[in-house]
Structures are given as structure tokens and as C-alpha cells.
Amino acid sequence: RHVTVNQYQNEPLPATASPPGSLANEAPYLLTSTSSLQDLNQRLRARNKDPVDMRRFRPNIVVAGLAPWEEDSLARIRIGTAEFWVWQRCGRC
Image (tube, rainbow, N blue to C red):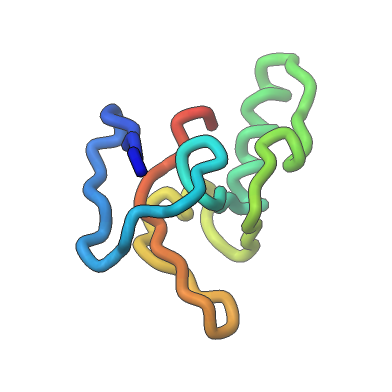
């Protein structure tokens, strides 16, 4: 299988992670936070633009309780007993 990594992110793949088997866009899941959406919508309103809904980004995992854009700096997250590597920001977002 061929995996293409967004070259503009300059973020290495985790050494212990195997390449994902299915890539929807760039990764098998998209992580975002409610605070990042809130910050984005404040910026849009300041420019007289309509706010956007979280569904526009089609995330698989939405977290609360982080500072805006903090999810971009996470290395791993745990949901119950499942652990996820956060290895690249989404280029389309």
C-alpha cells in the first residue's frame, strides 16, 4: 500500500506506528476540538462571515476541554482503552 504524507507539515510518522490501511483523506480519523471551532467562528464573525458547523469538517473524534488549536500539538490521546497517535495535522482543514 502506498501512503502519502503531507510534505508541508514536516511532521514525522511515529516510529512504532504501522501505516494505516485505509485513508479517507489523509488519515483514518480526524481529531478536532470544540474550542478550535469556537475560535474559528469568532474569527469568521469578526470578518462578517457566517459561522460554520462542526459537521463541515467531518471529524471522527471531537474533544472538549482543550485550549483552541491545542489538538494540533498532541502526540497521543486515549479514549477508554483505545490509544490513538496524533501524527499529522489535516491539510484540508
